[in-house]
Length: 138
Image 1 (tube, rainbow, N blue to C red):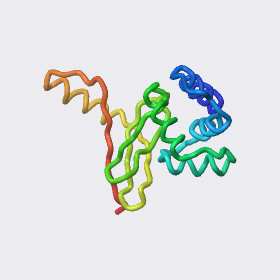
Image 2 (cartoon, rainbow, N blue to C red):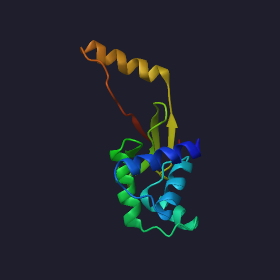
Image 3 (cartoon, rainbow, N blue to C red):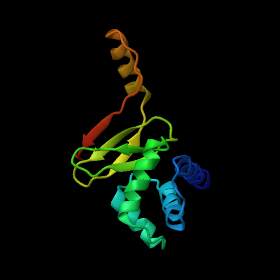
Image 4 (tube, helix red, strand yellow):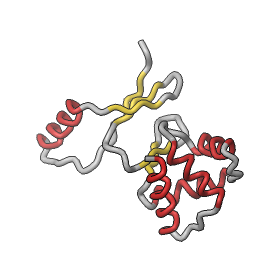
């Protein structure tokens, strides 16, 4: 999936008229390989570890362009820097540990069904939604 995802990210940059330099190509590999929800600083650090030599400003510009192209999503959790994830994933919700900032994905058909029922009872159909649970271990 990583190679295919990196290719889609590269195609999105090219479609936006952005030149894919060696540094950006390395950054795209880092973004494609991310299995968590990194923020821009974390992506920058990973790219630097990979020897990309990319500036933090380039990371931000690249993320903004990829978001505008619809291939990544920006996640803005309360009190946290913006985090990023691939847009090609199936629908899921997020739990954020308020003590350590860990972000966990989950999906539960009961929640999806209940949300749809509530919207229908009020005369609506859900077009898009995002559920974030802020949690703490007991």
